[in-house]
Length: 348
Image (cartoon, rainbow, N blue to C red; front, side, top):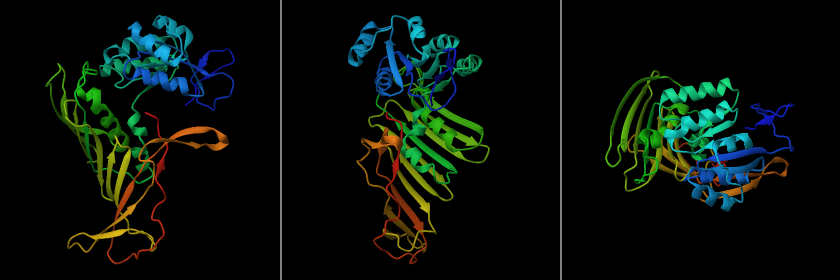
């Protein structure tokens, strides 16, 4: 996505190929745990000129500014006077207050998730962006996770989704409930994958350590009959970010933390020369066909050349497919079943 300037020099929200003239002037408001990463990436993007950072804590501003060799901006007004596009990474309770002023000043905004503390504030922010003809987007980056992108070419029609997002306790983020802090990612993924309206919500949540809910479970029932069961906790001993999708044609198990996907699907069309291992499924008369579907650097970041010689960052990750097929149909051979699974994604 690219911002551009019109002939009068004003900012425009047209999406087009960026001409090699001017870089987009970017800034970050709030440079705590997440904001400093926004600043780091703005400073490294070829189409971005990081004009400065601003935080109400001068020490944080100075630390990030010194690290990236950029100016410390003195106020939100200073940010508005210098930047065309801004990341808002302040605490959630301040999202509306900060973003409202930026949008009214016709500054494009990337707002950290969740968009706001309430649906009323979120609706007002969306209306302000439309009114001022600027782009506002929210940092729901899990849908760009390589594991998610790897399954999208398949015919994804979930009938049941099970999600677990668990993390150890950290005071950061406790200004909002765990639903807005963690589960919001899986809510977004569920709505992204299930193409239907929600018919019913059943939920339960408990505040254990903080003043807001620290563990929650929600069961979403959709008009098309699909169901999603989502669990989020920020008081767990172990970290987990897993999403499982069950549908008539197969089963998809996504480890979002490791950026890996295991795919189990019905495959009556497995080629005769497929390579793999067959395991009988009890007395069902069927077999699981198992094949390694990707070789990689284990999820580490890597670079590759893009068209035109440009450099693009990608994730390479190891994926697998286990294909259920009729028994005694497909002989083994040395030919690969599936090409290496490589999926471009956002750098976290």
